[in-house]
Amino acid sequence: MPDMLVKLYNLPSLEPAISRVGVTGTSVRRANKTDQRHVCEWVSKNFSAQWSVECEASFTLSPPCCFIAENGNLAGFACYNATAKNYFGPTGVAESVKGNGIGSALLLCCLHELQNEGFAYAIIGGVGPADFYARTVGATLIEGSDPGIYTKEWFNKMKPDKP
Image (cartoon, rainbow, N blue to C red; front, top):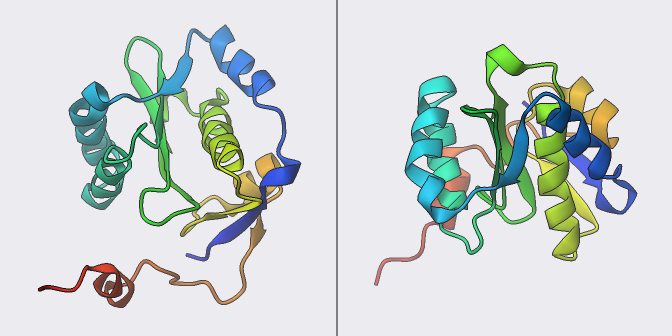
């Protein structure tokens, strides 16, 4: 799956997306350290063990680089700066609440944070729903980015040298 590029200086406003999910009784917030176990277990159960590992990485940063949506239960999550700096993902929304704007709200929370950190562009790694990202934030495909950084070779390069 290819990567996509997003112009952070041209993002839609966050407030309408947060208001839309609020009408459904869903709240979106930055996860805190005490959410880590619950969120990562939920990600592993509902998506994949690899996404759970990436989600765990987002909790090693301070503040955690993970946003969650809740409606009495965990309804979705989104991470940034987890696999690599300036990367968005992984992200997922519970099947039972898809179509309620939760994915858009989580995406925008993360991208606005990257913008606040001073980035002009962000990378959405290994996208699945390219149409969603293009429609929601104007993301464009990065030519030649498949498989991108999601290879053993890249991860092995990123390991610190052993003394």
